[in-house]
Length: 289
Image (cartoon, rainbow, N blue to C red; front, side, top):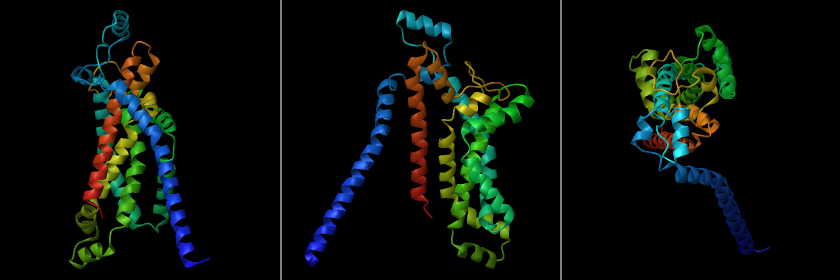
């Protein structure tokens, strides 16, 4: 076989592999585009000021509106408020704990205790969310003698923690050792160098991991069913049951009178997650290590 023939065969194989990859990528994108298209077509008309600022209607109002052929009253404001409050409380606790734990794991990776914590982090990250909801119910709901937004925040905190720990650990590992050596050579203490030199250098990637962790848990329903339970009214009391957008979608699905609100709530949730992911990608690109 001549040299030209070998080159021709290699070109054909390269083109064939390229076509196969494009076809498989297109097949992967079809379900995603179908879901987004369905939600967008059926939900965009519902997204309005009243839908975002009014609480979910009760069964009677929904039934009367459906019987009269009128537009469904109310919206998902109670779910938006609950999602924001529970995510905020979970983030306030999980971000510092996860970041400092990730730093310790990256610095003491050969320590036996760090090895155990790293293994447990991977195990927690792979734990199904419904099990986390049941465990939080036993740990928080039962002792408090009632469902609450605080219990929902604990469940979200447990789910966010391993994601933040792992992203921080991997980010700190790829930082050049010369940064630490330069800080120590200038007379800085070990933890001062870590907090004022190493951590700011990795802040972009860590923040990206935090945003991805938030987008990962914002759509969780099962843990909140066992902890926050849900509520029809807008509530700011973290010690009482509180709704969230994923919980509302589940409630709408189970109520024939409210099923039309599923699409608007789903579109809002997808848009929120999409914005978080785009922001994370932009930050990662701007502050790439």
